[in-house]
Length: 443
Image 1 (cartoon, rainbow, N blue to C red):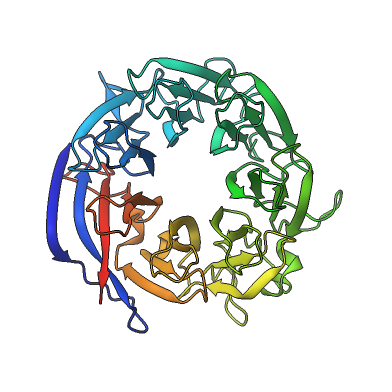
Image 2: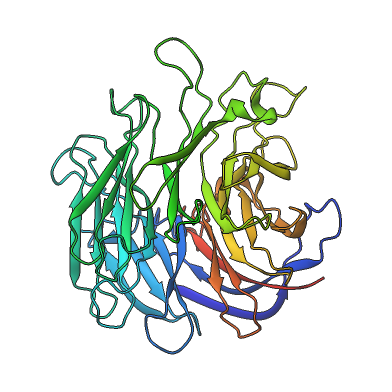
């Protein structure tokens, strides 16, 4: 692994319609070492593993090699200087180990954050049933292991943590198995809730209809009903409003009560103006994310993306993409909350991530990637304007496949940004992958 630190290199970007108040500066990079490693296919912050007072971060390479076998790996890096803290390899070849990897809080009670890693193609029990492993952040020992039950469950495709629900003072873990249509013939998709401490299954929530691909994405949505407990949202980007029949897929987003798993609200793409004349599936619900209370009504709100949305009066498969800001209270569209992609083919909304309050206006800001367009935007949580933009990467490199806030690594009071580019060629090695750490500075 090659680590480069650059303290004052400004990245230029051609995609900038108007001057934004902030700009991205490259701060640090990491490069993959093996062919098809796909380093950066997933990135995430994870809390302070080495107890130096600075949050650390996760870089996944699900195509990485060990002893000639493509088992996948996940690297855990120091937020302070980018040094490798440790690296975990998958147990089986071709398991897609590292498809998702996050910190899950201290489930073992030893004072160090623990770690969850999924392998959506693991076939230890059934073909591509998938798995999720929870490891100790202190000594990397296995704490929990869960599997999908049926072939092509793709268990571990989505992952989040929410409030303690079983009274043991430890957060619980949500895991999605989206049962993709075309592979799983009858599956609706599902989300399972596990006890973070004990590892037992607390609850399963299934999708509305077969082939909806419920659970392809999910997030802790904050408190959407003001009961003091975290709720959660689940995307189903192939959902249909009616069944049976030949009605086209449009996608949906569903919000659930964290306390009891009951549905709070469900919205389909065609509930909103942007998709009412769509002829192709806009893939609404491809990503969901909660940056906090955006409109000041006391309810945590939600972002939902539709990266294959076609702009009106454009050719079929325009695919510029759309992100919506929705009320957590009832799923209604917030004022000014339609955010379209900047150009045809951008795929705006491929990934969405909360950033915290970057501009100091009391609202949570957020990142949106347009992987096919090769750019990222930082948006204001108050008026959804563009605060910063960076772009210019070729589509084949998959720049911004995964994006996350890194936490404040340099002590300036503003979070850095982690961006994966898993398709990058490094030293002649195709798809070795590259990861960027950017900082935000005034324009």
